[in-house]
Image (cartoon, rainbow, N blue to C red; front, top):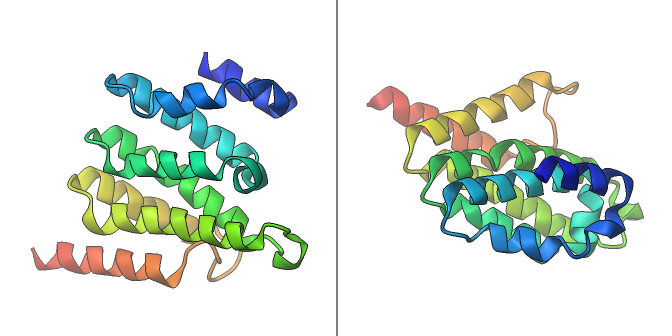
Length: 168
């Protein structure tokens, strides 16, 4: 079902207007598999149209980012890649052309903070390691020496995590 939603969004985003509340509700259902599916679907939709997130779905972005506190590690881990993709898009966006400049900057801060929190303080080593690897991969794959999507705070978080790992 979620793949159908993603394809609809790609070709006709206005058809999803009634689906957004269902996705939001799916983030907080008791069933972990449903929360994971809703979170992954939102991640795909957000990455498909990052500018629409800022313009129309900023509150939903906040609800999605709150999954960083979910009890299931898979759900937290599923946030990392879409957050880094969103950060990359928003960091590269030309602020002079953005009528929602303040919201874009806040959204960039929010997704970066989420990944940073997963690196620094997630309770599961697998989630922390996944986030560290994703950040390092983003740096490695970057065409520049220092991509704007990987902020100094993220690099410091990775450095602290690697340093703490080496001490133990």
